[in-house]
Image (cartoon, rainbow, N blue to C red; front, side):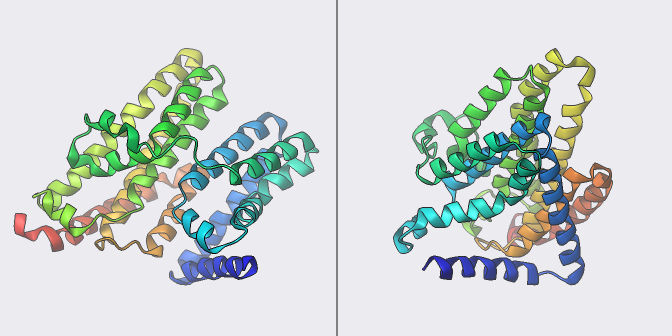
Length: 315
């Protein structure tokens, strides 16, 4: 059963890859290769390997505790923990190679033990649903953010507090901003239903403007304290988190335009995930940021046109 499931995973990846044309496939392959090389290089250096390891484990934890297919695995795969461990181990190959090259066997042991502990635990944080009453300050018009906070509330609080506590360490300050920014992409991975869309009683431009204002409002709310603390401890390097925040906001805007440019009610296509992966190249090559801006502007108008198909009665 485990073999069949892993074969299914490879078939899913191959299907996603085939859904786009050869140009996107080539760029996606370049992104993947650069990501693998970058992780390996960072892990091979003692100064950055700890930060890489912490980020890696955090991303695995945030994925595992909230992965949507976990109940399916528990119900139909007898050794579902082994399946999860194998998946995470395969994904960890780049960082493990870097640690092996630099003879950091202590970090290898820590990483493997962390993976073993992770697959044998359920989320200690809950979904945040119990704290829903504390989210009443968020307007219903920002429904995607209310849903995001319900899902990641306790995880964000822990990450935020730890990031501020260790803000005197430059690397941890930058890492915290990056991880929070990447988690925010979760706001745009699900298409809302048509009933939610029409309940807003806004035209296409108004609806899309509300999505943009929500992105800016909550992003600034989460980034600002971390940025200010970074400036207090590392004033001479104030521009580093500012550049990162600008890149993250650009990527979030890019993700938002992709979602609505190809919007279909309650239908999430693999194409959106592929386009998001292509946009992730900006983190490795920041100088392509103007290209992301240009593409986002183009998708912005396409998004309004697509939304107008469903909201034309409110024009």
